[in-house]
Amino acid sequence: MRDLVVTENITLDGVIDTSEGWFNPGDADLSDVLGALEVQREAADAFLVGRQTFEDMRGYWPHQTDDPTGIADYLNAVAKYVVSTTLQDPQWEHSTVLRGLDEVEALKATSGKDIVATGSISLVHSLAAAGLVDEYRLFVYPVVIGKGERLFPDATTPATLQLVESQPFRSGVTLLRYRT
Image (cartoon, rainbow, N blue to C red; front, top):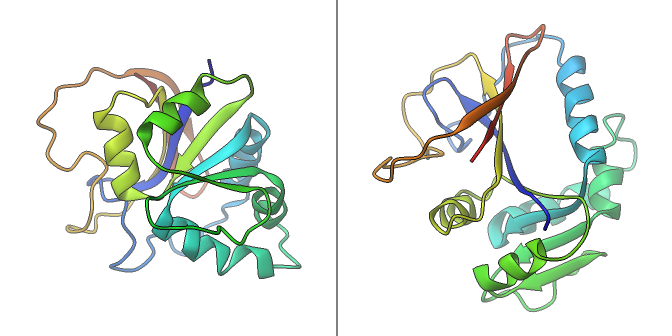
């Protein structure tokens, strides 16, 4: 069985939605953060997102021809899975539409590397509620936004997570890895 890993950029106050503007630690050097993301990409062979995040990424990443981060090459080559009941033709190479969480569970049961979900707030909330998340990889940015969508919006379901890694970066960002 494969691990389903939720990777999110998150503020100190738990916000993962960037609709209030992208959060970053100013002009800090993020090269070590990009290095950690590269290691995570190498451990995954499936990318899972909801329809809105998928459409946003599909409109941007395939058109990036000179991306020094390697993200464009990875996203264009990796097997992408979009959970949607409305999307018919994904129109992005190596993309498959999944119609619900039962198909996500079936994907987890196949052999392979990690399945990584990122962004996709509604999907991540559904995955967590269904008990499908095996690990959270949180890149915690040293900012407080005060409002916006949170990773754990109501925290009504108690959860005990086990910290398996804490990695600080030069920029003040910290990677926290938790197993469920």
